[in-house]
Length: 350
Length: 287
Ligand SMILES: Cc1cc2nc3c(=O)[nH]c(=O)nc-3n(C[C@H](O)[C@H](O)[C@H](O)COP(=O)(O)OP(=O)(O)OC[C@H]3O[C@@H](n4cnc5c(N)ncnc54)[C@H](O)[C@@H]3O)c2cc1C
Ligand SMILES: Cc1cc2nc3c(=O)[nH]c(=O)nc-3n(C[C@H](O)[C@H](O)[C@H](O)COP(=O)(O)OP(=O)(O)OC[C@H]3O[C@@H](n4cnc5c(N)ncnc54)[C@H](O)[C@@H]3O)c2cc1C
Image (cartoon, rainbow over the protein chains, first blue to last red):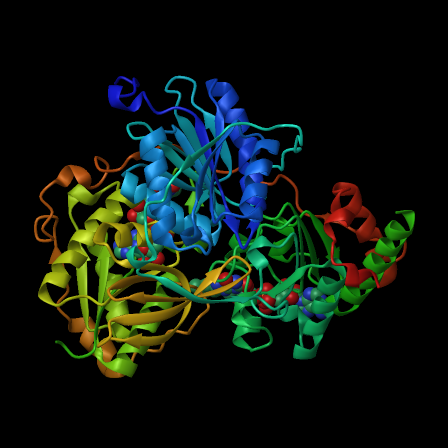
């Protein structure tokens, strides 16, 4: 079977990254993707482009400038007040038009709530392949196709997926899976502007309000760098405070296993696991959690796991990197103190 | 105009991930004997639809695309109170990626819509096997439905005015969106708890007639848009991640006091990830 790309798809060239700009700020996953795009583009000997959609103004200007710093060779820009708050329709239209006009071979987006909403809609209008939540991207030597590797079945399997007979090849990638490139503040390049060609009346969905999370409100567990969680080993509802205290010192999010939700010790948005949140922090501290498979699949993507459990045979020690066999009710406050002391030393040292 | 809301809830039957094993030699999924469940995320969509029916009246149809045995999941959903179940099954659907899946499901929803106009299509946020979260937006685009993803609440829905207000979980906050019916909602997890089925519902579900449609029944003429043929993505290999070779390294500390163990733990974590103190950002923590 020939791996040659159909003639009409050969015009598709270059690697694009959608720069996720919301409320005047760029999501860090976009810069991580530009770093990755650079590597893919260098292998393919093509350019990297950033795509910025937003209203005219300082935030958008800054996003364009920084896209170059993080590795873009050029930026496609659609500036329009209708692109101020994210809505599926105008964003899908802007990107669909850009892709159809300028024909990239690869298009990557962050696997954020915005990125997944947009990517799913876009891949359908473009009738192309979209690989979700990739953890590794490479170029297949023989077909020149994007070989996108992703975990499935909650991380118990990996698969490599390719889109051979459609373009662009689309992929989403979770925050912090790819490393952050060093910005080069001297870089700049050409900006290609296109128009949205839509009026407000064309857009059925209206944004009535945006309610920012209060710190204590909706947990941003999925995106937290550090997560501290407790399980039934905490024994009494008031001991949940020990988890919160450690989280506070670490600037971390806190969470729990499912039984604590069922007992009402924490709110449902704090549940980690198969039917709760999947977390992917740099550090996960799990206290009094046995490590049932449903909990494991939501937490084992953490770079580093420290488990505290009285039972040396608890299953959590099978996938944690570090373990403490001990009473969480004693170890948690001691850790809070030890981190507080350590941070004070670091701060004095400057 | 019909009374109440006509709702379709898409559910997928998935292997219970807790019991998935990978063949150590061939690296393939060993599905034999693995129990199947309704994708847990879809239960939140089902409950939301049932709650809206309690509130405003109407009907809840559950729809799945899958093999014949997916009937079990449809019966379960009916046992929780769904009015009607449709199984979309055909050999042409085998090997569907999300583009092909949303194509087939859209055709079936289109057929339901031709009988009674559909007001809201619900899906879960994502599945626990494919885990892409792409099928909902795919259906919305194909059918021209207004797309509401990651919905945590539906504070208002007005059939007469054809309007819906929804809370959508976004980065750093909640978007309050208002749009027109018909729409597609992907429901966020943890937003409700599925009701237990009543005894009459459970008995009815056991005996219920499950409507079974093949591609032709669903009005699909071009089967090249289905299954493996209609799927632009190709799985080139499936493999098990490298198993972690060691169990957790135990931290013991100079003596067995909690303070000594904690101090040793902090040293170990910082040595393993020297940038960690820099990640600890919240200044109030240092006060
Ligand atoms: C369909 C389904 C979906 C599920 N989804 C999820 C999910 O998303 N997330 C989830 O977490 N669970 C989920 N579960 C539940 C899961 O199977 C486990 O029951 C649950 O994770 C156990 O919680 P736990 O570890 O807190 O409690 P337990 O399993 O009871 O473990 C308590 C642990 O604490 C230890 N301990 C006791 N005292 C102390 C002490 N003083 N100090 C330190 N350690 C102590 C014990 O040794 C034990 O290991 C799901 C189950 C099903 C069937
Ligand atoms: C290992 C593996 C990796 C895969 N990776 C990809 C990939 O990267 N890209 C890709 O396009 N496809 C991929 N697929 C194929 C994909 O899983 C199937 O297309 C599947 O039919 C739907 O996708 P999903 O499970 O990701 O559903 P999601 O999009 O996560 O599901 C969202 C919601 O859609 C509804 N839904 C989904 N499937 C059905 C159904 N069959 N019947 C009724 N309702 C349904 C449910 O309400 C569900 O909650 C992969 C499959 C496997 C086994």
